[in-house]
Amino acid sequence: MRRAGLVRLLRSMDCGFRIDFSDEYLKSMSIERLRHVVLAASLHDHSACQGDRSAQGPA
Image (tube, rainbow, N blue to C red):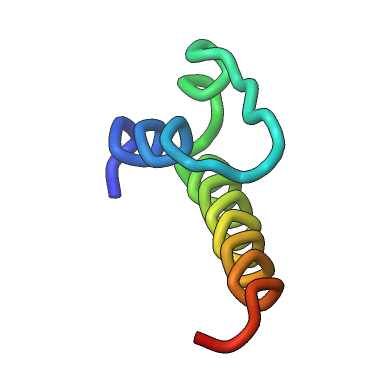
């Protein structure tokens, strides 16, 4: 995924905490580092969703 797509994805996540990176900071980050940040945020977002579902009990 290209930088613009990674930034859009990062900005669209609901991680339960504020992701507050300036556009300038995101532009200065290496693409590898940006991918790492997006992956970490998506794992947290996914685990938060799983936690919400498990709290509701079986479907």
